[in-house]
Length: 144
Image 1 (cartoon, rainbow, N blue to C red):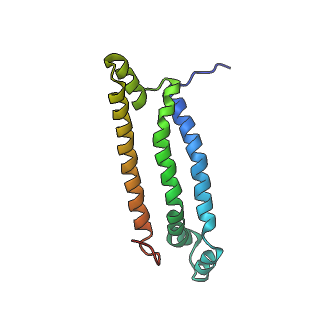
Image 2 (cartoon, rainbow, N blue to C red):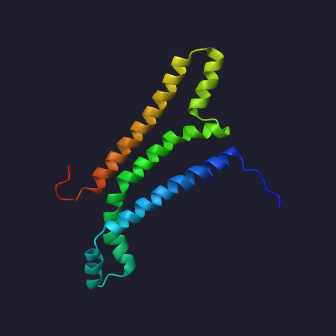
Image 3 (cartoon, rainbow, N blue to C red):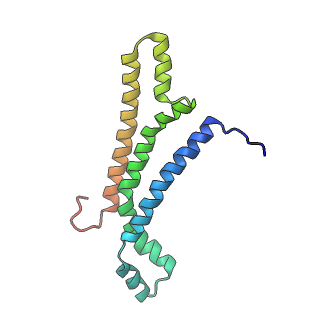
């Protein structure tokens, strides 16, 4: 059997996808399990189908519960992409190292890379906060 070598980019995508997918699937499973059985029973009492019950009752509650940990995992994934440099994928921090080797200004280049990571993570955090407020709009006692 002949094995074909994966490109570093494909290997990184597979690695990050499997790692993030494992955490995300557990988060979604626990969010679905956190919706009380009474919600299902009440929907079936009202003659909802299983699909209607999921779409109109269970998933909106589960999304509200799963959103914070899923968002945090995604933000962590953005920061973890710097690990891809270990398998020869050019990413922002490695590019700053290469530029530093040419212009001998490590403080400037590393500060710029840190600033870009901070901007991206801040924007994602603001998006997370907006989505959390939007999904909690009808929850009694929420700040929205």
